Image (spheres, rainbow, N blue to C red):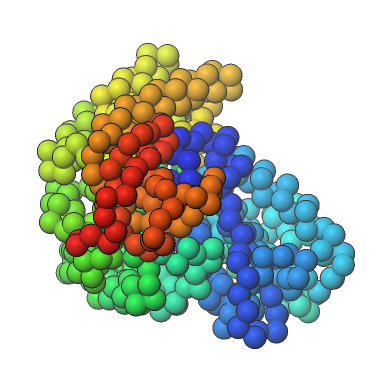
Amino acid sequence: MNNLIADIDIISGEEAQACDFKTTVDENTGKTRKLYIESYGCAMNFADSEVVASIMKEGGYDTTSDFYQADAIFLNTCSIREKAEQTVRKRLTDFQRAKRAKPSLTIGVLGCMAERLKEKLLEEEKLVDIVVGPDAYRDLPNLLSVAEEGQKAVNTFLSREETYADISPVRLNSNGITAFISIMRGCDNMCSFCVVPFTRGRERSRDPHSIVAEAKDLFSKGYKEVTLLGQNVDSYKWSPEENNKARLNKKEEEVSTVVNFANLLEMVALVDPSLRIRFSTSHPKDITDEVLYTMKKYDNICKYIHLPAQSGNSRVLELMNRTYDREWYLERVSKIREILGEECGISSDMITGFCSETEEEHQDTLSLMDIVKFDFSYMFFYSERPGTLAAKKYVDDIPMEVKKRRLSEVIKKQSSSSLERNRLDLGKEQVILVEGASKKSADEFKGRNSANKVVIVPAGNYSKGDYLTVKITDCTPATLFGEVIEINPQL
Ligand code: SAM
Ligand code: SF4
């Protein structure tokens, strides 16, 4: 789900490591202590850091963007690829001076790396005081007080029920216009390459009423776009019993499903027609026509689907345990095009050099990309993760230079598809939501169209949070450029 973080649309795993962390903004509500938090990896982690900041605020901490001012430094980590973990280990060394200057400083490693390595992390990284898994954030105040007494503390308990539904996140790094709402946690899929089921535990859906309440609250505060987050949003499923299934010890057939993902989308879409809804990530095996028809029904549900293919070859997909094949994937794409039209943005994640992938099978990935013409993709070479099904069952036998060469071919293919897709927008009028000034120039604003493409327009008599009708005049593979036709059109 990295797509929601980066500004650039074509990104390889290598690049992603360099740009996908965010630090805290300064918040001063008069608390006596300061928290500095950095988040790595997927959007889920960024949303979790906002829950952490909320729990810490209750515990007497404001946030700071200067780690030398902090009483606690947290790294909310990612384990998805080896490089992600190396980045965190390297980053920890930067805090040595701060710790020497203030011995009472608590350094915490949170999230997936904490869950994967548990106590081992304390042995390997002497600087670290507390290790906290993704379901244990409510325990942070307690763990901090243990650390303050000079002891190390670990809580990596994985829950079957925790959704943090009642916690109102403190928005970090917010542009005040777009926000993430976590709708579920964990993952019950067992993609053979993936560490997530082990680091984030079993899938559980959050009470839809708390999701709608969060969306309403954001809208009342001026936010104009929410992104509903889950590892596999299409398997969202909630009922009063479902939420407590483990506790009540009920069987699947005894549980009455009340709200599925299509229902949830509709509930959030009805908050207000001028609140845009996005979601991520969709799983090709689970995305339903009902979801597609719900997207079509509501103008404020953005016409964009992140639908990771991972590979274009059916044998490799089977080894990956993705539970769909090339034909199934292409059928889902045809259905998206049939119901939502050519304008709907589709993006993907791709992995090159998975165990035993042949040159021909790699060519199948390139040909799938040729057929679908993704608007953008996140592309990685395979990185074996300890404990995963692939690490146990298969040999990581593709040489690194081959993985990287295949990755560069996939990136090249994506770049030309992105340009081709963007060229289709030339001359069209589209509605964009202004997110703020463009990073490159104060004379330009940056917004996004429904298909999640960045559109740059000249600065004018409008500001972030405004909707604009723009005419697309130019493009690169990563960006559209437009001229403004109308400010705040009737939506
Ligand atoms: N839940 C999402 C899904 O099923 O598509 C994706 C979650 S994962 C955080 C984001 C992406 O990282 C995956 O889609 C996959 O492309 C990539 N990824 C996961 N494990 C990987 C590994 N071991 N090596 C390389 N890339 C990996
Ligand atoms: Fe990982 Fe697969 Fe779950 Fe995505 S769906 S988080 S790739 S196991």
